[in-house]
Length: 116
Image 1 (cartoon, rainbow, N blue to C red):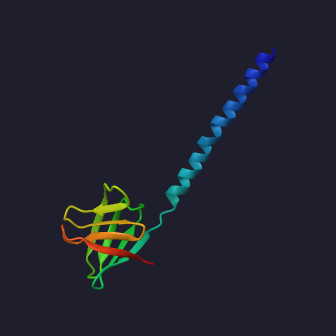
Image 2 (cartoon, one colour):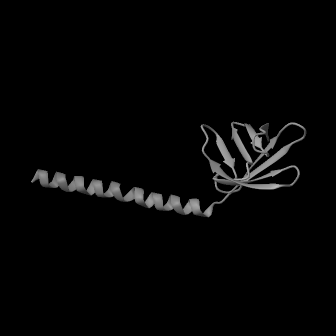
């Protein structure tokens, strides 16, 4: 008899533990869908170069604008560390912890620094 009561209490406890996380994850998913924030990072380089990088999807894709007003649409690519974004025209940016490299022309890297 005590085994029957013990197994009933154990089943009740496991059922209660199992149902709570599903409810919590549903709430978390609804909050993620309602909040869309654009992230902007500004960089400076030599000879008065300024780069503005904007993303609304945590840098999966981004728009990079240089100080001439030209806008480049980039998407995330493989990087050993940090974030690297590039397009099929040879334009890329790779940054980590406020330092980075931008290539407006393929094969001609320019060192940049984040400006806050």
